[in-house]
Image 1 (tube, rainbow, N blue to C red):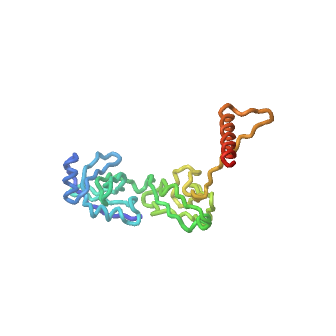
Image 2 (image 1 turned 90 degrees about the horizontal axis):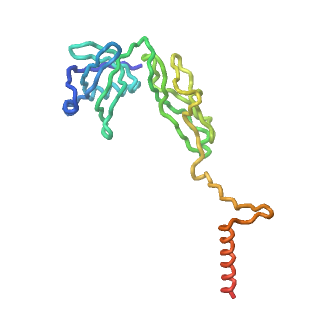
Image 3 (image 1 turned 180 degrees about the horizontal axis):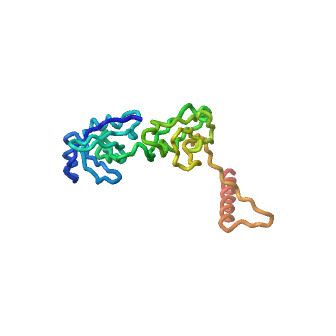
Length: 227
C-alpha cells in the first residue's frame, strides 16, 4: 500500500468566495475529520494532491497529512469533488484512519484474457468497474484481477467468482453480476406476428370481417381492370 506525505495549511475561511480565491492561487480547499476530532478546514497544493492521488493505490492511498503548525495525521481521501470537465480537484474530504482497524474501500476490477464468447462474435459487457471491500487500510489491493477467458456467449461472472485475497472481505451480494458476454444486438431477431387461427365454427370479429371483404373487393377490381 502506498503511503505519501502531503502538506496542508490550516485556518482557511469557509465560504464559496474564499474557496474560489484558494483555487485561483493554485490550492484546493479541503477538510479533515475523524472520530473525536472536530472538522479542520485546510487547503493543500493542487499539484501535490494530484501526485498523492496518482500512485499505484489511487484514491486508496494512505496520506500522511502534515498540517502546518499543527498535527501530523494519517488519513485517506474519501470525498473527492472534481471539476466537471477540467482535470482538477475542487474539494477533498480527508478522513483520519486507524491502521489497526478495517475500513470500507472500493477496489478496481481488472479483466484478464479475452472471453471465449467474444472470439465467437459476442459482446463483452462489464457490469461494474469496482467492488466494495472491507480490509485493513494497509492491505487494500491496488486492483483485483478476474480471469474472463472462459466466459461464453450468454455466460457471466459474479462476485462469488472473484479470487480470494487474504484479509479482504467482499461486501457485495455473492450473486451480483460483474461481467457478461451478450449476443450482438444486430443478431436479435424480432418474432413475426402470427396469423390468428380460427376454430371450427368460429367467426371473425366485425372489424376483421370488414377487412377481409375490402381485400376481396380489391382483388375483384384488379381482375376486372386486367380484362
